[in-house]
Length: 162
Image 1 (cartoon, rainbow, N blue to C red):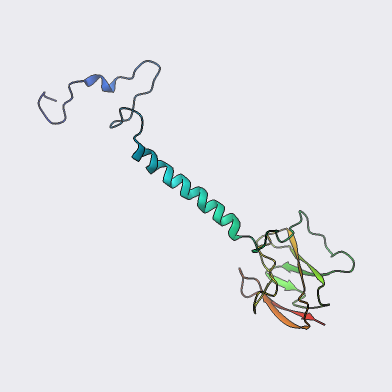
Image 2 (image 1 turned 30 degrees about the vertical axis):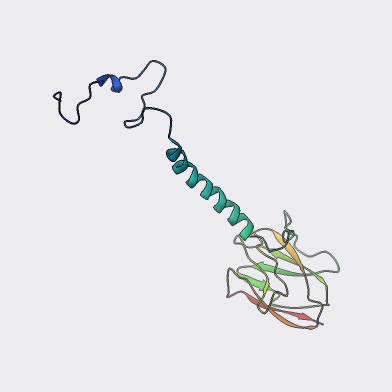
């Protein structure tokens, strides 16, 4: 380029790397300005906030997880009732329990499931990942309580408290 043209630079050595340092990208000649730092920090902060929000969104609302266990057993502990989630269905679909009884929920699918009362907030296991299990307590009042997997609305059942 000829001298005097808008794109010509008097210090053409900007293209030659300095010893021991990589060449600065075109347009950057020094440390980042505060506005450049903010433009880089804001997406990182938003990403971290989104990850934290996602982690808390999968909880069941109280300070304790849905009692996941590392390996579900084929049968529940003696004296407790259980619901198994397998092939995107509850088994048994209708379970009879006593008021206040603990119910173990075993997820044998690879997808996450929930056991959530369809009316009110009577019970909700929260997210139970595939291959894990959780527990919840039956309502204290006798009655029939319909439940559903919030992720898969075709999965339904009834908890019968007597």
